[in-house]
Image (cartoon, rainbow, N blue to C red; front, side, top):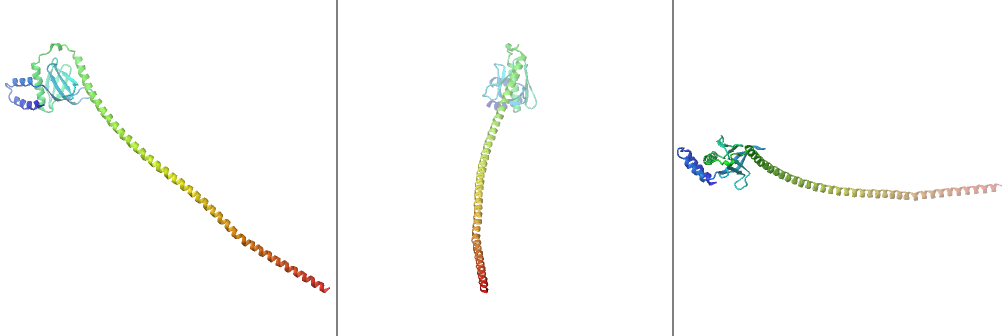
Amino acid sequence: FFFFFFFIDYIMSLYSDDSDDDNDLDSYFDNIPLEGFLFKKGEGVISGWKKRYFCLSKEDNIISYSKNSLSTNIGYISLVGDWVVSSEDGNSFRIYTRARTWVLKGENADITQYWIKGLEHYKSIKKENKNFNNIDENLLKSIYMAEENREELEELLIEKENKISEQRKEIVKISQDLSNSIKVIKSKCDQLEQSGNKITQLEEENEKLKKEIEMLKQQNVKNDNNNDKPNNQQEDNNNKNENQKEKEKKEKKEEKEEEEENDSE
């Protein structure tokens, strides 16, 4: 793009003298290609300013445009038949063709003037190609609109693909978070299961202790009963001895009384 910087200095000098500089200007555009970045306002599905690389083809009577200087052309402006270039406010200009009005603008006023002067020079020296005089304007307009819509739809498709890519990344992130959450839940479940097993084990040990305590209680009662049994037997023996003594005493008394009766007789 070295010619832009050269052209800026050169075009400023041309503006300072309008008398005989037209020939120099014509000579300049005869030797320098008319190309570079401009902003194009769309008329398709989505209108807006798009930065495109434009290049005038003097042989084909078209201005082709692409996304950059190395990419494939994605559209063109036909300069067949009558057309007019007109400057606008804000560094913009228009190209009025039979099929469409093109709204373009440069990054600054110098670039805009570069294109306006270049197109005016091209129009002044270009002889109209008679083979294109009878071209169908409606067909040409349809082609323009189809190309414009295709360009806009391609950009929409790229935008949608980018959004889908972002959504896929978000889904992967959510999936990873969900996987981590599942791992945490599984870990908690394992801990809960271990705690449940410990509780079950403690309950079994508690039941075992209860049984042992009950057995000890029963053993103590049995021992108490055994301890009481000898005392009762001793008491019975004592009672038997007392009764025996009473009986013997009574028998002796009866014998004595019987003897006394016998003596008295």
